[in-house]
Image 1 (cartoon, rainbow, N blue to C red):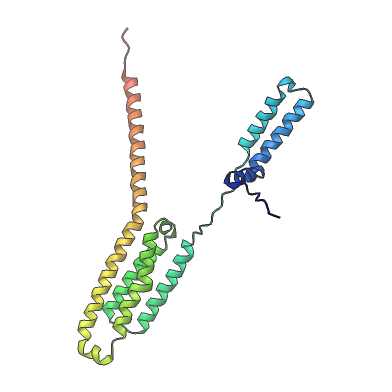
Image 2: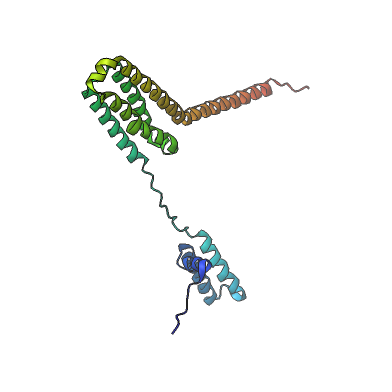
Amino acid sequence: MRSVATSSGPGGGRAVRYLGSTKNLAGCVGGIIGLALTFTGVSGPYWPLVVAGLYGAGALLGPPEPKVSLVVDDTAVETGRLRADLDGLVARVRSLDPPAEAMAKLEETASMLRDVLARADLLSTSPDALYEVSRTIRTDLPTSFETYLNLPRWYALRHGGEAATELLGQLDLIAGSVSRTAEEVYETEARRMRDHTAYLRDRERVRDDGTLAEQSGDDLTLPD
């Protein structure tokens, strides 16, 4: 015996979902009220229109179905992990006694990164900036210090100055990249400040224009 498919396709699926929706239930309540009015004689000969109208009103006023959201915004969680990774990196590098100037540059860059990570709300709207911060903490800075600190002792003694200069140059490049990323992140806040300043100025200008108009009206004298 062959089985017969009963799937009704996308259109049928939407119809089935609507039958169980809150809007349809609200419309049915309106329709029942219309039938009740019909049985009590209130609707008269126009009862089909009354029932349909009350159903439509109920369906329109019924709450919409909750939307499905499968995207999880874990920016706050990720920034917390990045802060922990950054603090751990700084502590490990400090314990390995790097050149003082290199350590100072690392502390300065880490301070900028902490400021940016404190604004998870801004990073949530700038995934590129979050990626740049993550790459700096988990790849760029560790690679620079690992490469320098893993040099053999004999090589460091013979070429120590050259290697330290190379490390400082890398740290300058990383700091510049972090600074540009921070500028991009805070540009949103800066734009909001500029917009608010413009709004306040416009509001004061309108108030001043209104005051001048009132004064001009008071100065007018009507001829006899």
